[in-house]
Length: 220
Image (cartoon, rainbow, N blue to C red; front, top):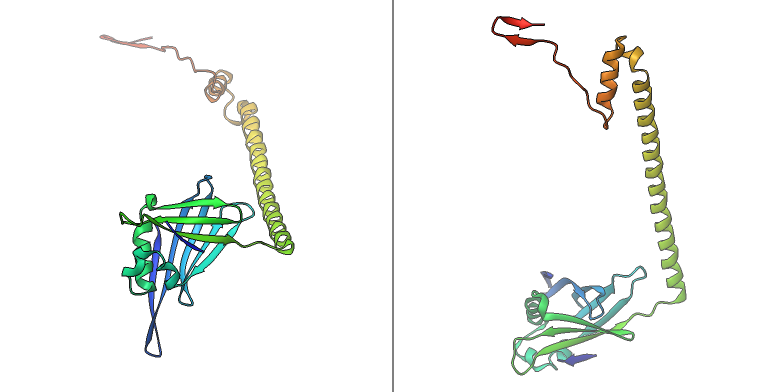
């Protein structure tokens, strides 16, 4: 149903039996009036403007509809355009600014509203119907979601285990070498104590002046 009221465009010309056809694809992320994120896809399919909206939910909702040139031209603003390619180019120009597109959520449908540069015709609205999923499809999606979560948890547990083992190794190395500093480094007890104090973050090494330099030479 059609009611009056930064995307990524792509045009590609096809030549088939001397008849030119144009493929069009435009993607847009839009926040709805209920602050939900939707991913919009505009395409030319079978000489119609196909619009698909997918919600950013764990279990995604999908809305879709197609519009012919004549349906779009029910909005008189688009009478000035010759074909679907020109219409899509104009839609792309309008959608390029965030303020020109809004999305309203309704029961089992959404309405995409695109503002127009006209004092008489303010906007064009495209109504998309929700694709109702069967119980089988929902079970399939839930099963896939559970498996994905299971894999992510497994990876996370592995990383936690590896981190725990690393901490154990570091703790052993630090404790072993610090506790055995006397026998490993040097037999000088005072010197080793200074090293231990330096290693500890909550202690400072104290230094004393061994000699001082005078005009007549060092004084012990």
